[in-house]
Length: 318
Image (cartoon, rainbow, N blue to C red; front, top):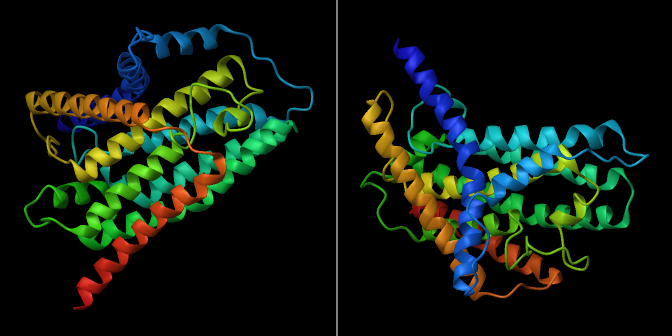
């Protein structure tokens, strides 16, 4: 009976990220619109968009290969698994041993790799431009992400997220400059990976600046729905990762009661709401940068992550 309950909680976490991912994007859009003194779309508009795309017929180019058809499902599956591995409202669940930071980075890198290949598969100029820009961003974002993982591993002594969250929530952590640098670097990487302002504008399709949209211009119907859903999940993934590592309060330990799990879900939804408000405030207060300035932006994140790792090494050697 206990095993069935633990599997049910694990399944509830997997379903929760699917349910809340479009809502987080819709909430951020709504808050941003209200800050700009506009009515804005409904909170459930992302769900409506996904249903509309699922009903539409798929239109494929004549020279599209099997890779072009399979990539949306691979991207969705990899992103969903990565998002479901992160402890959202509870730690120490049945599959928590798989929630490793390096595994999550590998899953995201695999999804990016297939998306870049799909952008070049049809042979359009926009797809090639978007793929080249995506790889350029990845060449700086992934090293920064790995350095952040190394910093957390040096502090917590592990890369397993349940262990990291338990250590970060304990009084042993204290105030550390290296963790502050890692937090800022992780936020910068999250902004770049999700194509948010100032790196990219997800609400426009300008051919001179778009990155993610250029690779998916040839997709339609359910294929585009899978890619859009994966984008929603990716935003939720980074928000959940930041909350789990740097704001671990409210996480329920394993084998807790049903009431504790419900309270953990309430805390998690509150964290998502605060993150959506902060994201909307940031995007409203800052302008989009030129695409040629993106390497400088990610280079700053890489240097912050590197400095944080070096500070930890120096403090351990003293």
